[in-house]
Image (cartoon, rainbow, N blue to C red):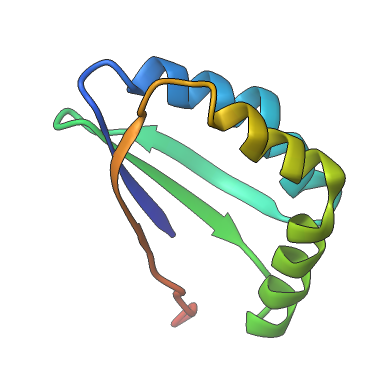
Length: 95
C-alpha cells in the first residue's frame, strides 16, 4: 500500500501523471492495482497486489530498469510539485 499526500494543486496533476506515465509500466511488468482512492483530506491511497515479497521485489526491479520508467521520472521533473509525503507499507493477507 502506498499513501501519498498531495499539494493543494497537485492532486489532478498527480492523477494524470500516474495514469499516463506510471501505471502502464507497472502493469507491463506484472503489478496488479487493486484500487486507488483519494481521501477528503488530500491523500491518495493505492493498494497493489503481489504474490509475495519476492514477486514485488522482482517487479519493482524490472520497473526501475524500464526505459519508460526513466522517461517518466524525467517528465516528472518538468511538472509542478505534486506531493509532500509518501509512505509505503507491505501487507500480508490474514485470510
